[in-house]
Image (cartoon, rainbow, N blue to C red; front, side):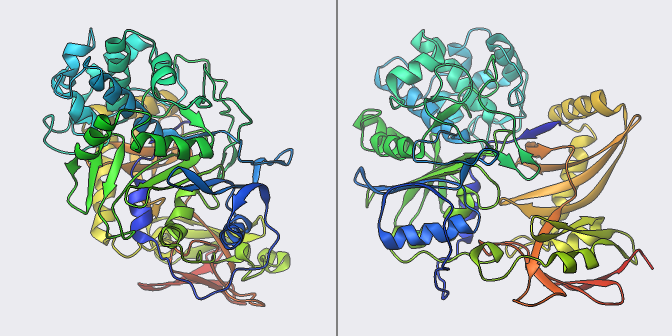
Length: 570
């Protein structure tokens, strides 16, 4: 499988902004898939158990003033052998690694060995190209202008290769002028830490800023303890920490691993002036780039005003990639609260769980109950009913739906723009012209309009032959980002892929070959055998219903109206 995905760093912004923190439903009575409970308030534990039953698999840590208020784990670390997640399970924390890299930089500033105004080209021997003029502060705040990727996850990249690749990247804007999230920028910070300290980057992190039980997902020193197998929509990943490296594709931007308890403890120690000095905490919290929406970029973190949770807070998240984990952590300085979560399945990710329960959790209110079949509010799809409606349904003006049973649900895949638009209408706040602009950006990228686009085109051509056509299938909103599906036709074969673009038109995430956009459905109500709705515990998925009739018709009803398709195209 060819795949590239960004390590999520800002998706929590969307998650918390969309969170609905009220519910008038009771907590379902269900046997939780619990791995371990090291202590939670009974009401809080009951609320999390309902989410575990709805599909959350992972660990949760909540603390106040550095003292644990809830520590628990749910689901399976390895579904194949039934090994449960426990509070000692280790997760890859993805882009939360940037907060660790930022702390290492500030530690060197504190020692007087580095200044935020120092230029990258003066610190890293052999670094050429436009990024050499960027300062340490600009790299920390993602305002260096760096566009594109310097390497792919779990593809060997040596140090000299990383320096050359980063130096060869284009700038989307002049350093300091604008914000553009950059994994390469944080790898450059890791290179700076190594050169300024005169020590191996990993040794410097372990000795100076990481907690004793933390380490790295790949290579040494490895984070000790049992590891969670990561799962994606297409099954378990094979990335379990045995990648031999060199690891410079992920260094500084997504390489650290630890337990959720250690993540919560480290977050408190960071902001309490223990992992770095109190003076550097002041620098961390004051060094910002205002994003103009109530948030500001800080070194390794995003700073939020008090509009979402009732008090200002800092947050960072990591996930995606080919490990199959998702993690998020929030620090609220006024109440000294930390909320940390990690997950190893896509059913209810850590960020999705925070999206659903974060405001209530921080306010001390009862957690909202999950929705959908996993919550016990509706049954699995009857196998006979699913078999009766399985098949292809064609739209009159092109495109089709494919219905099939899947894991007690009814899966409906969309093929073609009209089908994708009907099954995945954009949520509130996402205008149709945004999707069209995103599609145009993906086409321009694959036409080779930028250096990154030309590299992407060359990489695809190496797999499928010279590219002959790029056809847009449609655009959906998933995990808080726009994803445009395209069929790329080469001289030898064609691929279905999706791309998510960053603000500079570069690749924020991508995957291919991939399956068509697919929605899992459950009966609209108990006993219903003809009308279905999305199986969506968080209640943030597409607002549609799907109805099947005895004469072989399928109707999708959503905010924009009704779309009808006919079985077999008859």
